[in-house]
Image: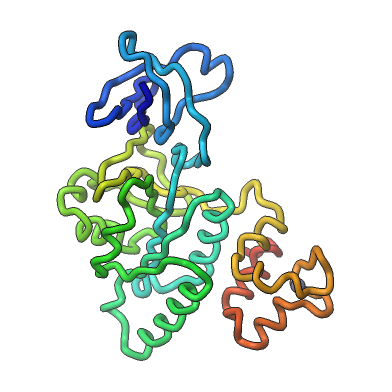
Length: 277
Ligand code: ZN
């Protein structure tokens, strides 16, 4: 039987098979092969002996939290307390893209800002939408539709409004997630177990999302290639491997001058590849 691991506590794996869950052990061979079954894995299970027999091919794998086959990451982006940080948003977008996960941007606390600031943020929202991202404002009803049949992780600054969002999505969920925080940077590693919980027809990770936010394992070129709107222009750069910094006849720099690429985002790009933040 094929099922999905929804919870792990040391060597006890809770596997969901259709509407039932059973607790299985992983077979010793996995330890020999250095393949550790992860939450999110689709696995073949020996129902009689309650063993995981095989881990099916993964689409992707996150390390912190340890989850396989993540479909999407909701980046919770506060516009007030804490203030909007394009730097953090762009950094998360690049890291999430690099991990072959679909990013979804959710702006929160829009009701706390002035009209002037709101117009500014709306322009930013329109830009991200124009380059192909799904952007929501936390009180939009249609955000409820994105979870069905997907594995979702949440990420964003501490205090960005995750609990409020989850409470809006499903009031029973908030109790389950309790005091799980999504603090970034020096995240506290208080829980060792990972669990996927049901939300609106899908599964969400009940863990801090992306507890460390850095470009670990990424080359400068990876950062460049995951600024997705650059790909639309780069063929017109004079140099095939253009880094879009000091090169002559760079189509990206021209697009920034022409206002086609958001300058703030390009500035973040420069910071990232220079290792400034
Ligand atoms: Zn260029």
